[in-house]
Length: 120
Image (cartoon, rainbow, N blue to C red; front, side, top):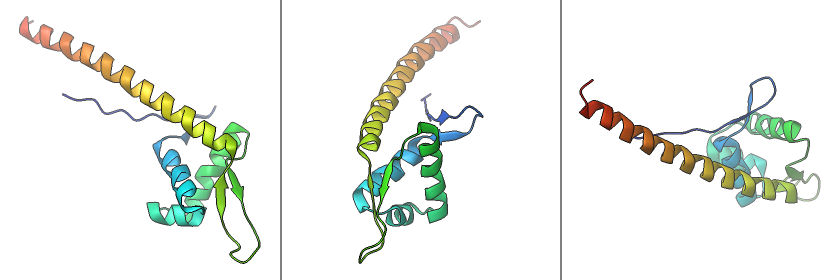
């Protein structure tokens, strides 16, 4: 047996607004400097990627992207300082939650093994 965990943060109506996909999207925006490039590299439509980040911003009440308009390229985006710190906190939370779940799963597995040995 092994454990697989997926963590999501939900809004008040039970809709997902933060999880691994949003984290990966934010990381790709940081790498590429563009929401469009980030969405393409992940196989997401630009509209889907934008709606994911809009949901995150709405629920956090803070912008996560500094969007650049105008200029020669007329495009681009960078993470806000808030978003960078949020990503760091989320990674730490995710890592600790998964480690805790793994420890609890090991305890559960040991108890199941003991139960099976008892032939109940």
